[in-house]
Structure formats: C-alpha cells, structure tokens
Length: 162
Image (cartoon, rainbow, N blue to C red):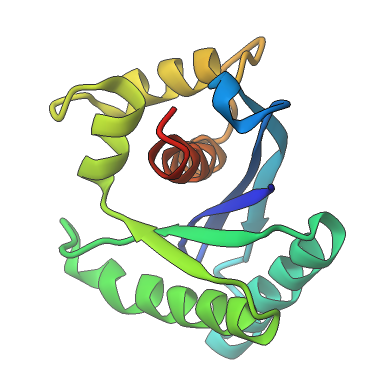
C-alpha cells in the first residue's frame, strides 16, 4: 500500500509517499519519495494550475499510490491565500478523480495529534517526529514536503491503527 500525501499550495505543493513496512501490523512506515511541485509567480494562473496538475499526474503515474491524502484547511491566517490554495486543491482533486484515487483529508490539528500526540505541537515538532517515524537521517526539506509526508503518515497510522 502506497499513500500519497499532499500539502496544497499555488507556489509550492508538497508531496510525500509513504508505505507500511512488511506486515501492516508491524507499526513501521517507510518513506518512498518526497518533493515539491513549484510554480513561478510570473506564470499566469492557468499555467500555474496546469503545472500542478501535470506534475502531480507524473507522480501518480510513477508511484501508483492507492490513495491521496490532503490537508483540509478550514480557515486561513492570510485571506489572500485562500483562493489560490483552493484553486490548487481543485486541480489536485481533479488529478485524483481522473486516476480514480480515493481522497482523504485531515486537518492540521488531526495531523499534529497523530504524529506527535499533542494538539499544541508546532511545525518543527511535527517535522522532528516524522523524521523519527520514517527513520530518515534528517528532517525532510522543504517544509511543504515534510508536511506532505506527515499527512500521508497520518492516514496510515489512523487507518492501520499503528
């Protein structure tokens, strides 16, 4: 089972692929791959959205995930980001639908609780824990990729009761 985690954004969309190791009851997870899909500010909006869609399709085709898991954000600290992030989420959902991938969503609080055990964890706490959970030598960079790995791991931890 391979899970594709997505941290959506117009400028940077993070992705991370996580899988259980061996028998699903072992409680161990491994990182398959991670990275970002980046668009440039000088690109017009349709080009930026098309790049996210095209690059995400490449990731899905290459790794053949069983599900896509995305951050579900109910509010934004910066009102200017809500529309672009929502548009990016739309093309991500379209890519999943075209590939017939089931989609699951978790809030940032659900990810924090699952990965660290604490609702008041900050981003650095989550990054340190995901490094440990996936037995990585260092914290994944950039932050968007680390967030995507955390989202994918959250699905596996919760669905497999790890």
